[in-house]
Length: 124
Image 1: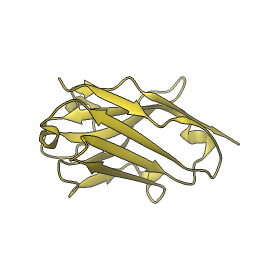
Image 2: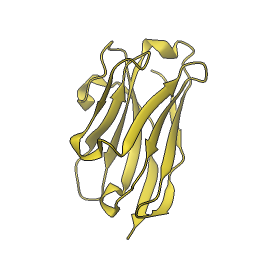
Image 3: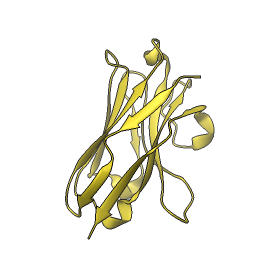
Image 4: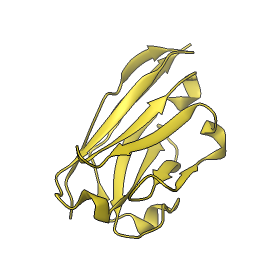
């Protein structure tokens, strides 16, 4: 399994921005589709965004469209989540995940490797 380490979380005011990063240990990073999921206290984990191996396919949850952008830098083995216009309801632990599937799936069952998560807190 590929090792994933997220960073970039923190406390931000509503309307602010954060960029999350996820560094992968795997040299063959291009073998993996990548995704971000999140889990708020007392809620189930939910899909945020995904990207295929070359960035040609991206998928977003409806509630983040227009506010969040997923991207990847294969030379750095890193995937990013740029989050703008943050809302208090975006408060959650954000997890990076990797899949050997060729498509950027939205369901967690397709992702076999997960990071430890990074906390994002949006104050009102």
